[in-house]
Length: 223
Image (cartoon, rainbow, N blue to C red; front, side):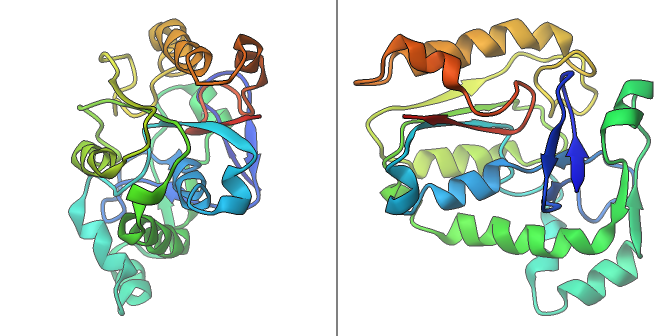
């Protein structure tokens, strides 16, 4: 199990989809829930039960463009040569050290980048699920430009791109939560709930059915 946290509620994940500056050795990592959610939202069998998707700092590509090399034919070899067996970084405080995965097998980066490239190459224009994307233009973990480019391809009638104000997180990637970005929690929660409450045909009570704790990187809203 991979464990991550940016508020005070942990989210356990069966897979280690880890987004970071994949070819540098000091960048912090974050849990990547948004890439699988964005991928799944292309399929009608999945979208029929989803009222909206809220993507927080989505990984459409790490900040370091060289990370794309990991999805190439020599990706596994490059990972071994340039990163080694394990990737680790220095937590910002004791709570982050307790609740984040600050060391993990570097081989997890190879399938992560394969999934990222699959999503980028997919027909994002066909996604019909209402979508809110929240990101920081100063993000040092994932590429803000990639986020903007992907959002520009979306065509669903209800969509919103929200630029978060600078927060306490030194990487500007974690946008809310007691541990790294406490000042961002209230405004981010307000933005998310306001988006949910304006969805066509969705009662305001749906705002109480957000299916992930605030602070994780991807949220879906059940019908």
